Length: 273
Ligand code: NAI
Picture 1 (cartoon, protein in one colour):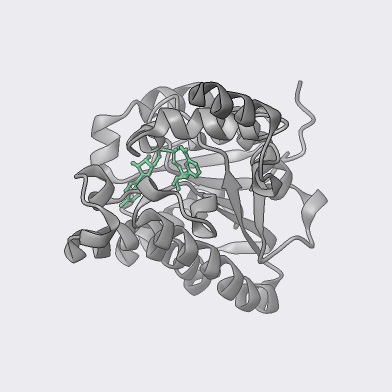
Picture 2: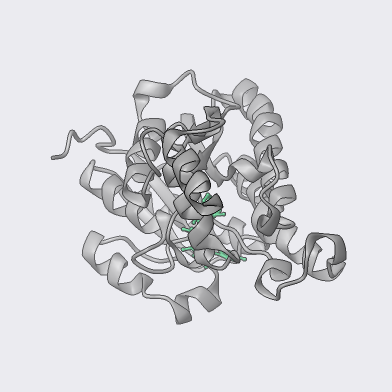
């Protein structure tokens, strides 16, 4: 059921690791909607994941790039400009990682070298991704850049740890760079704040299952899946959202507006009996 709303557009998708990745679903749907794509990921992820399968199925080349390296990013955009014989219309930054989370260091006792690494990968890389495109003037007018965030940027979810700070910075970069790129070339920059989603990055957070079920029970529409997220991304890449910029957009089945639901209350009361 395709509407071809991205017909003829050129896009770069960061972060498809395996079939569960949000970026994987976004790539598949963008392809169905008529976009020409380039896939990219860190060299190590290309060895560990299954991105080749995606590349073949949607006929999109893979160009490796570590999103923390300006050299890699510049190389990526240069190759993309050649490959497309034209400029780029949308970019998805779907990248996140915290060494403190992975290694079980609590928020109040971080290893600051790991904190720096996680911030570089999860947030600064968003700035670099935008800056590399800016320097090469690689984007078309009204191009759309999207990052993926989580509500721990605004509220405390204890086990999300230093990723909460990374997401707060990511959302701030969307606003600040959104101003400059908007003025320069009408480029839109937004973040989507997505429900907990069953992916490699998601399930790395301790207690993720409880997290996931609680959010599902609290949200009137239930959690948004990776496929749902892909649909929302498509709208934001399309020409139907040309004046949406510098926003953090909640895509969470209503979670962010909730305080208490019947379902959560029922479970909580049951556990007290
Ligand atoms: P994922 O593990 O499939 O994707 C994360 C990607 O980041 C991987 O492809 C990984 O190779 C890539 N990456 C890590 N370091 C990199 C580097 N230096 N350079 C380039 N790429 C690098 O997991 P998922 O869940 O699809 O994550 C995508 C985005 O969605 C992340 O920003 C994540 O924080 C965000 N998000 C995820 C939620 C979840 O519950 N899964 C909820 C809300 C947001």
